[in-house]
Length: 95
Image 1 (spheres, rainbow, N blue to C red):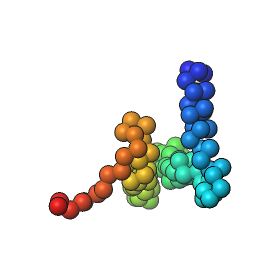
Image 2: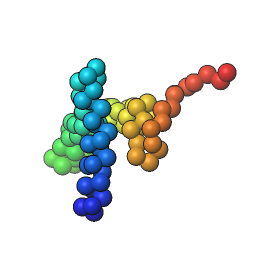
Image 3: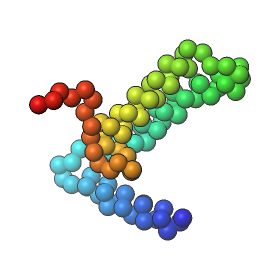
Image 4: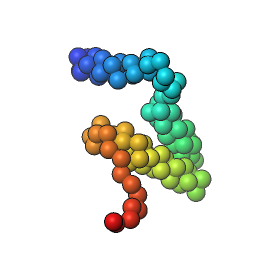
């Protein structure tokens, strides 16, 4: 497991090295931001379940937001380790 983790870190380091290019944009940690948002939105839902043993419509709205974020990350940004770097277009018109 440690070797696999180390290899993943090495690959990530090489990938991120592109930010050292002279004209590259500043680093933005998109995947970390996505995960932070998911945790933020699901935190309220978990708190409702733990403390009140029920879920309100506000928590349902947060679940929709998390679903939309995950969709964006995987389908539009191509950030899936299973699918690879692909982007899918929703409701595309046939040519």
